[in-house]
Length: 351
Length: 273
Ligand SMILES: Nc1ncnc2c1ncn2[C@@H]1O[C@H](COP(=O)(O)OP(=O)(O)O)[C@@H](O)[C@H]1O
Ligand SMILES: [Mg+2]
Image (cartoon, rainbow over all chains, first blue to last red; front, side, top):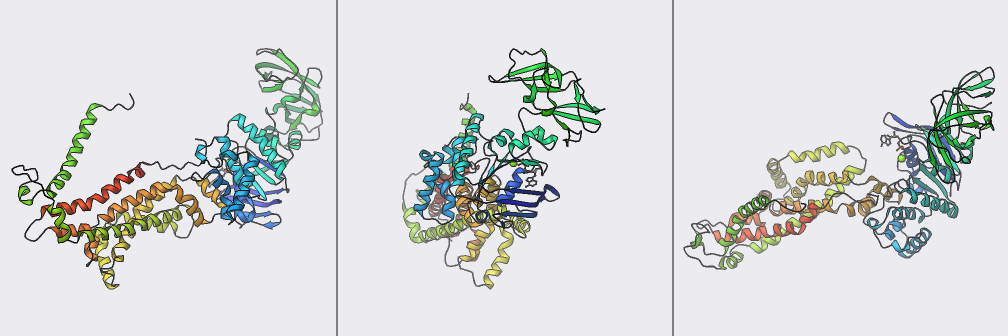
């Protein structure tokens, strides 16, 4: 177990700087998720921590020791790759035991530790098979087994579930969470899927274009995003951003509703999460929505509609049955659940 | 329908196969008929009798058995050498970073365009000065060295498609460059290594020029073959036997290992296909 501290870390490929002066401290035993759109540098960051990619500038410390030049073994990291990267010529047993063999452990020790790992992941019946004879989910378990057998300080996962089908992804996600609870080691997990991030993380690091936009617990990011990007990225369905303007101490939405507020005059974007709309009359103002599509999920339903101003919105209408496409219905907005952003994307907090 | 071959393909292939088989048949028949009967052509049927006399005499009149083993030894060493060096060099050029990597690679691959005939004379002078004439190293070194270009190229080409994650996984698992090569790359690169081996074996087994120039006391089969023709007699029957003995090994090797050429070059990483 170990802390991981990145100070002013940069990474360039030639002239292209893909990570810029990044600072991050990852607590011992935490489950940290790097999330962000594709190409934002998550994998690159993870691979620098792993020791697969040289760090251009800045320092990486693991457990208080500088590790910029150390190889993966010295760093005490194990990694699970997106496409599993199992050795095709080795059986499952040999795949899992390979790192121990390289470390020079005796045959008996290797067998014992492989057996424990296999038991943890419930892959004992597969030990004699080759990777080619396994299903996607089984391969992923083996890949995880290969990581846990070494009892590493830090686990690194690079989009480990993205090659699995939806159902399996959910169940593997739960298993990874359980694994973290049992092992208690530091885990760093990369994904572009905010649901995975929300469900797994103690701490989410939202990245965009090589920079950290915000880092915090899932609740912090959900309740109190620092900017438009984080607000839009975290939460599903996405937060609605409604155009509006301040003037004379009142906030007026382009679609009509208005309420009192205290921000400097000018244009604003009002962020309202689908689940934060209320019954008409219960909020400070109502908006009228023309329903385009209703997505009925049994327990709840999402209404996809258009406002009078032409903006599309998604509203969760948990308690209101019988809504049909084509209906014109109203929802209320509570100012205390709405977040204000400047047109450039920064959060306006002193509401 | 899938699997149905149009009739004309069969005919075309049949004709081509026959054309190829006729000379082979000729050599076999020449080897088992008395020279007098076939002097005007092995297909003459004025007199037909069969004899194994050539098959028996050739071994005592010429050091055919000795040459056979000698050729085998040369080809085996050169083949193993190439099968070892080509993947090691290809791996280094493809996956490792070191100074002058590109320049070195370009120099080696450029040997492609260098015909053997060009190096024969300078090499002869070199071997003479080093007193290596009539030493098997004088042929083994160029056998292996001249094969670097194509063999490294072939294996490196294969490694282009080799999954990079496997190399990275090995690094995470604690492998250095050598153990990565040994435990991860080589076991998954058997098809290009065999392909290189087969080609190298065929080339060295049939090599004529280098051993003829650099060796004196020992002769491999192709050199011996040129000497079976007597001064006064053409020895067609003996030459046929020697030719068959010379050809049979490459033929067997090729038939046995041809599957290695057909084998696909992709390595399954265990990712979902
Ligand atoms: N070896 C490389 N050479 C040049 N650019 C690279 C290399 N690897 C990644 N990049 C660039 O770095 C950026 C971040 O890549 P990556 O970390 O893989 O993104 P993510 O994992 O967040 O999708 C991308 O713009 C990508 O094109
Ligand atoms: Mg990535």
